[in-house]
Length: 471
Ligand SMILES: Cc1cc2nc3c(=O)[nH]c(=O)nc-3n(C[C@H](O)[C@H](O)[C@H](O)COP(=O)(O)OP(=O)(O)OC[C@H]3O[C@@H](n4cnc5c(N)ncnc54)[C@H](O)[C@@H]3O)c2cc1C
Ligand code: FES
Ligand code: FES
Image (cartoon, rainbow, N blue to C red; front, side, top):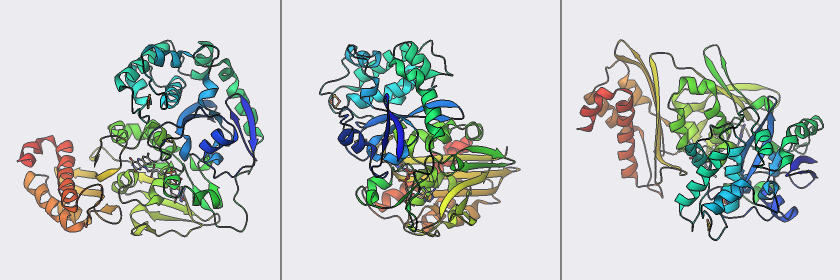
């Protein structure tokens, strides 16, 4: 039986764990304040919060419940719009929306309010900018965004005196959220003491692995609910980002948000925040796992392209034996992997860049935010005495699989970067790719994009090349 806290109630259910949480909330709990919009993670109308204990701390994150399996709610505090009501009055977040005329038809409003409630429960510095970032996954079709941004700014001012250690306690004490939030940490501690093996798939089956569900529910919304599932998202053993000697080791169930929050990743990738702002939206980043991105095998998977350039290695397990595999060898052909159905990724690692190694990631999509790439690429380059000693350039959207430009790298190694050298490298790259025309652009456009993005890598890492490369 799945057990979790739903708003202020303890719930247990034997409904299928592959059911979307949104269906459970609306059709089995009659909590209809959470809205169904796109059902694909794009609009944010279905936003809920999930709170869990992480190393003794109560951490809340916003999720899109249309893509969240009920099984991933197990052991958590799930908060819907009904759970933050403070009737008969509005809570201060709702009041800020009213005061700033930030709602018209109201369909999107519960989603915006939940994202802002998530901001109140986070440890983010309470700036207007951070409050606005918290609503980056919510779309409104009829109110002007400026009034919603003003409402978000109003919420940030409520948090000026916040204790970053215990944001839920602060929100309850300041009557920003209902008083019951102050007791959730202790209730979750008691709840997880009694959880055990409820999510094991039926024996004798080869289950489908479920990470955050952000690809599976979009691609196979019906089928996935019928299949035996192995839930990996909550498994502690698949979590954590650590430095081990000169390697960074990342658990397979780490999310994009976990990467962004990791002190190790922040220390070695100073522009990480810029790169990750190009990937989906806050609620999707909170759910999207790194292994899900690798195994989905999209030729434009952003994390795949990022970690290909870092020459990441995977560890795979079938439950009894483990093996290692370079990420670049996982991809055989379009969506064909060197992986047996019973194998799952447990973790991956890469060598941390030294002082003479630089990294950069570029992505172009039709919209800057919340869009998948037309073309994306990453570079990891090591210099020795002004010469390129090693370089790896990955490229997505230019072939059936995420690609490493090996001929281009071989040409560059041993050379000093100059405008002329980079232009020849771009020409070699053209011979390594086979883009097709599709909804994200024509083949000709994608070829041009890759050329420009390779130049952008070098202009970013070697600014003195700018004039030569722009000529
Ligand atoms: C609105 C929206 C925006 C998005 N934007 C982007 C974007 O900007 N960039 C981008 O790259 N992607 C984007 N995505 C795609 C998606 O979020 C990512 O690919 C994500 O990393 C998938 O992870 P997941 O845990 O949700 O995968 P799931 O949907 O849970 O699983 C995906 C696949 O991986 C398998 N799997 C999961 N974990 C494991 C494991 N440990 N071992 C073996 N197999 C496993 C599953 O069986 C399934 O085949 C977006 C998705 C949505 C809905
Ligand atoms: S219904 Fe649109 S994000 Fe879930
Ligand atoms: S108020 Fe109508 S969609 Fe936002």
